[in-house]
Amino acid sequence: EAGVTQSPTHLIKTRGQQATLRCSPISGHTSVYWYQQALGLGLQFLLWYDEGEERNRGNFPPRFSGRQFPNYSSELNVNALELEDSALYLCASSPTGFPTDTQYFGPGTRLTVL
Amino acid sequence: GENVGLHLPTLSVQEGDNSIINCAYSNSASDYFIWYKQESGKGPQFIIDIRSNMDKRQGQRVTVLLNKTVKHLSLQIAATQPGDSAVYFCAELNYGGSQGNLIFGKGTKLSVKP
Image 1 (cartoon, rainbow over the protein chains, first blue to last red):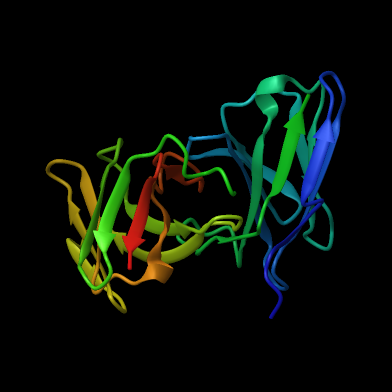
Image 2: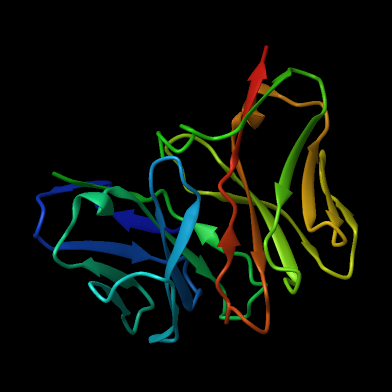
């Protein structure tokens, strides 16, 4: 069974640009979570999508947005990039939106903002 | 990611010894706790979980202890192996309050000496 996949692996942008990160959940999983992992910090919750709808978002500005497609894959968009947005962005999926469903993580997309 | 271990508390143990990784969680109302392992260049991987109505749970070579009185969680790894070298994160979940998103701790880097 394929795990969670993310693309691209690395992304380099300049300040003010927009970045689009993609995530494909494990087959059959309906929930997708996005996390930001900045250097030396733990994982900060960004967004949660389940069945195509945004269920919850973390304490991030509106320029962080996303969506979930009918096939349950997801996109994270970051507008007006700032230097401090440089981080590893991790996507996780779980079978349903039940809180204690195990979240399975992808390898991440390393975003560098110059 | 590859730099996730910088600036983190580090635990260094000899191969074959037992490891104890500690975590202080923040919300006394949290109902569910998870330990994740993150190896360099990979996303976090689920290790073991425990619900708040339990104080101990054992897995294969791992044991999680929960002390709700002092809001403390620990992960014990028996007979630590070089493959256990990674950053370990605890995460907490409040069923009622967080609508499904996990709150992660900052992580502890485990280094196993051969």
